[in-house]
Image 1: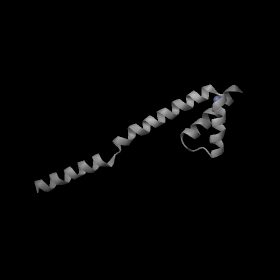
Image 2: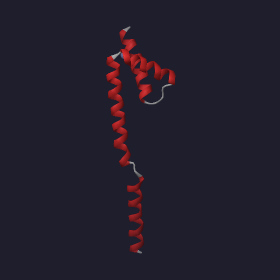
Image 3: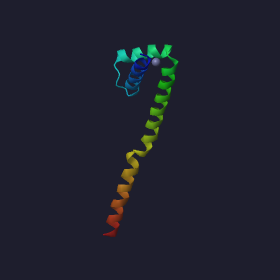
Image 4: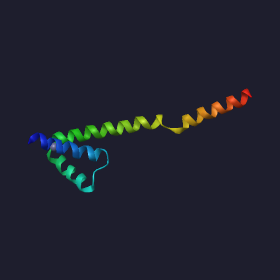
Length: 81
Ligand SMILES: [Zn+2]
């Protein structure tokens, strides 16, 4: 019984972290987090991991670097001709 309860918490938590929870599910989790310290810590941890992943991915997917390297390739090719 306890395990099932814990799993329901975790599933709800993942939905909210992924931004796929409904408003009702979100409110449900927030209400639960106030009472359940274990889930609150897990929520804060997951949220900070997700935020830091987002921040780390952003610079590397910036199109500026790619555009510059394409631009360089084009001018190299044009120069050779
Ligand atoms: Zn819980």
